[in-house]
Image (cartoon, rainbow over all chains, first blue to last red; front, side, top):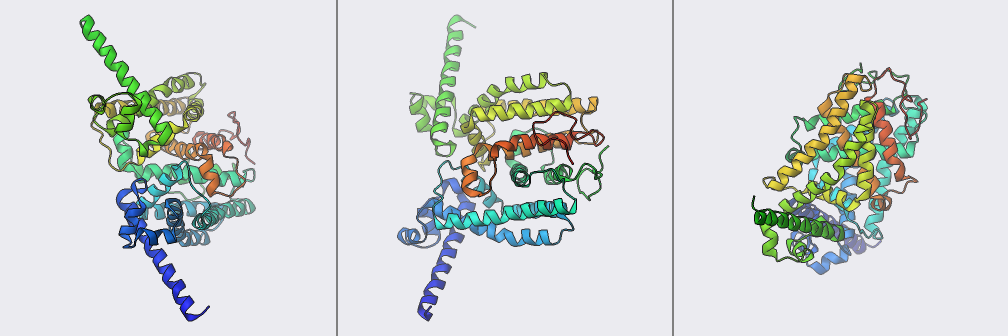
Length: 229
Length: 229
């Protein structure tokens, strides 16, 4: 690549990044459902025509925002896995790290759910392919943790890894959804509930579900309710 | 009440119900995020002014739609509880009935999540109070099932009932969210996963988490993966 071509490539990447930061700012302010390409162009101080040179539409832009967001969280998830002592420990460390990462950027989590609920999403953009690769990598961490746990005996031998990975992902999503939207929950539910306890309860549930029946339910350390009766 | 007053009351209730049916139809067609009061008025064949006599705004209308929706599901939930043999059986029956009910009206489930994510909801309308009472009744079924299970020994004595009720509700929500949005999941996740298996996996997880440690993990009947290794 010539010096000029390398510079143009750098400039293009910097502008793409600036657009994603602007989109993130608009999402934080108005929510994904009210976002328009006009508004993103304004926030990025670009013409709408220039914006469309980078992203063919909202779907491609959202996919790029989502990919950037997962990419930012991946280092923490990888580090969590590396510090664990066994497979079950990896699963629990991923749970904890995921919880911390979502708490840092609640508006992005809300956006991810809103985008997930869009009935018609164009998944053909390059941005979507990159996003999908990141999702695969994230779930891959969970799948490998479960595999390691079956090898080292910390996780039941009879579980179906792929389906349990999806189940863990899904149930954790629901728990975080409640936990991160405390105001919305409290308007609906008149119960004396501390939503802050939900992630620990969920961690304890994962441990009880995944550990072999022979293991004492209180054997792994848990910040939740302690030993069963 | 005079005959005329009784007739006016009946007519008012009939029109309110017609508006809710119209709103439901608009939500099914466009999703809650794109719904406007104009569109609901058009679908109900009313002037916008008349619509506002019944609902002060979108929040009140959404609360009424949500209340109607929960009210429709409550008989099935009550029936599920009545047929169960013990407290743990009640929890699992509620899970199964909830799953069936959500599957009958997926667009309403999507609307409930979208509405849940609205950052600013006016909870002062009469419709919202009625909706909140229905939510309380629904969670009350779960709370009483857990209480019964602790009395009859089918559920661990050491669990905190209120927090476990919220945890069960949250994790089930996440699982149903994935299960009812299979198309959206499959665009993102390139895994050979049968999402239809998620509710059974979740049911098995509830059983393992709630049953006392002394109970054999395979002792309750389960359509899921069977006995642990």
